[in-house]
Image 1: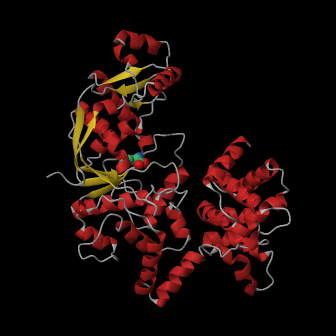
Image 2 (image 1 turned 90 degrees about the vertical axis):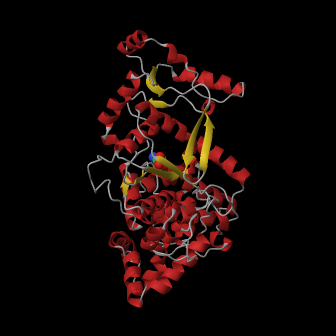
Image 3 (image 1 turned 90 degrees about the horizontal axis):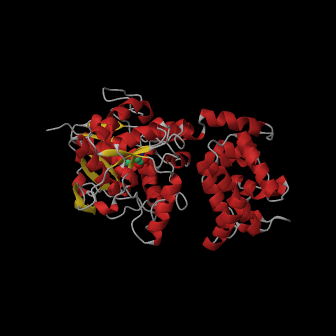
Length: 493
Ligand code: GLU
């Protein structure tokens, strides 16, 4: 039997998401349960959105959770390199194979033409997709266009009729009509492969036997299976895991719940408790025990017992479990040690001390002045936001605009935060002092404290976001309708 090899293939385009860790956990358990390997591959073909900071954050967060990989960045083995941006030559070679055997074709359509086609399809209420315009180009015509330097992409051919049927480990037979599937671009005009192409080539070359991923990829699977056929390769087995959900059943999103693993780290959750909690998403131990370690889960894991009902990521339940870990697993000494390591992280302390030193007279002033650096959710009431010229609705607007602005920037350094907030205050026609008032309260709990700009840079986006959102709800919240109007105003600034 083929060796079991699974993988997690994150794209480094944002915060390290709890959903990535959830999928990584189940892949690792499945591989290890079968004595196989768990591979980590970085899918950074989207050069505009991929950042090395995001990659570092994803790798660091998985390590923090204890989800180490058997092969991948830092654990190179024969199947590397494990970053798609370093595998360009492999994709060029493979796309040629598909062009040669007639299963892919060059498409010279301009984006204007594609836009027109799409518009007409929308009007006709038909499935939007490429209309096959360039399929009829001859080899000579393509060569002439290429020689003239015309930009083009490479697309895959898709059958006109019938359906794709595949077996999903959790769902059984899945049937999707080919008419639903677009002639996917495989190579973009800049020569970079798309996710679909690089993903299939790499899964094959890395000898991945089981693709276990989120259910949002089900509709892409027919394209992937077809690519395996075009190459004459055996496809791996597919398993689409249910998506994590907010308590209101909507898809887990950072608008409703913190989704960055860094947030949970900054809030002082234990990695082993968070990992255990992610293991409870769709999975229960045969014994029914809710508290289990990674080793225990790996030992008794059985993928066929994963339940498809959308697992709810509920912070209250996580709090309960984390408290249980703290009480049952940490001796007093360990508690003290781990608390100190978390609260007095040397990197953070070295940034906070200069701010405190300027303002305290005794060490006993430190907690009341700087306690908010290690606090979680602050205890705030409407009265804390009372101000002579900033009404509560304006406070909500300032907080919301600030959040949108800060979410746009890649790295929250002091200078960046300062420049962004200054500019925003100017655009709103407010004195910076007044503008910063609700931020001081939301971030530090007080109207006067260490510089709120520096504090935001130290606390980072995850805690900042959570505090600003809490501040907004304390001043009365923003309704959906108001949010729409505010967003319009924000975009027009
Ligand atoms: N790069 C994809 C992602 O970011 C991987 C999806 C897959 O596992 O095939 O989710």
